[in-house]
Image (cartoon, rainbow, N blue to C red):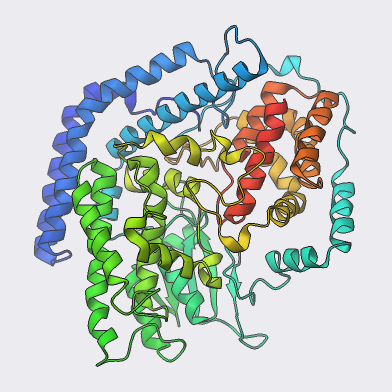
Length: 598
């Protein structure tokens, strides 16, 4: 996640003309294929071609500026950590000034990361842009410079926090005295995730009400980070229809290599893929069609033929594609705001046609499954990249009510991501996002540089609202603690990767699956995360803040190196993969609490 220069950037000026020639040649090849095979309709292709050409023209203006900015930044702000973007602070007096200077440095580095990602991914992955434009399914990080000779092998006071076993017992003692908390934690951490009514992001099988021993007829291959919108609509459909299925997790190309087992059934590597009754089906729409064909009576998602809803069904599906096209064009080129606003107005009006809150009335349908992944990503990306609050905007009241209705459904509750995850998972998938308008107004809030990831946390959230059913901060805090307690061995090693040597690079800056652990820092991270867990278990935020200061002062752990590891972990908490939004913001805030104390 450091803004280290991508390998392509030093050669931008030398390779720019050949890049354009190769890309234009590729464009004409794709055009010829599309024309001969009728793979796409011509209006869609023309619109997509226009977007590609505009992206290419942006390179010349961005390449020099981005390279210069990043080189300048590295000259003036030596990196001290990977996750947290820290600069060498020069003569900053007072704690307040130091915190403000850190935030200023992290802002500059986040901006540099956005700029470098926007340019480098667009320049190097035109084939993936083409894939996403035509309905497909689907960075290296720097190592902190740490002198380990000055770091002791173990903390000076390893007992500054209880052991993991003692922390686990402390949580059990708290739960024993609070029946409602016990019920909540049991619901959020089900013994049988395969049968829980809410979608489970890490479940490898969903049986619902099927008898014991039932063998699902469907295996869904979807991305392991829950980033892919095309996987999401298939996932949501299966959850709504409650059809038993297995899950096999596959990394997206932007953050990992596809396993050979998957490539043997899907040589192109695209996701999602479903194996239904032995038949391999790729492309999300084909999978959805086959599921509806084979299971028409199990919670039907297509209205009955001859009804008014059925007549509107196809029109609304076409509207979804037009809305997507207008949003995507504006997102990646910076042009098309008026077209998007018109499409958003039309979508808002369409939701009123049958009285709402869903597109076809008071019952969820396939139309909602198709709209959900991209409305969710619009709500996240538009304030961050365009300065436009989409969800919560009075202009689109019916869309707001649609979100509220969807968030009451167990299927969507377990699938929905958060703004932070989406704004950083979109660029490596689509080839970069173009910031414009008053975007700076919301960037720091979504990136956690304001009070959004600081204690005390606002109950209802900030630009991103917290779902009403998730606003019990005490419960969210305890479940974040439980997640950390249950997986502490893996989490400690993962956080140490901030100082570990890099492996094979991937395009997603916040994903570096091949980075190595750093064993020398593990004892210190272990203690720091025990302090985080104990702070999460305090009675209230005031007690947590007081405890954090005292524990860090007595711990005797290296400050900069440990803080870099905590920040590395904080920036990689994914929703819904790791936990839901309300719990993620608690964990991020408490990681910040200990990092700031250090």
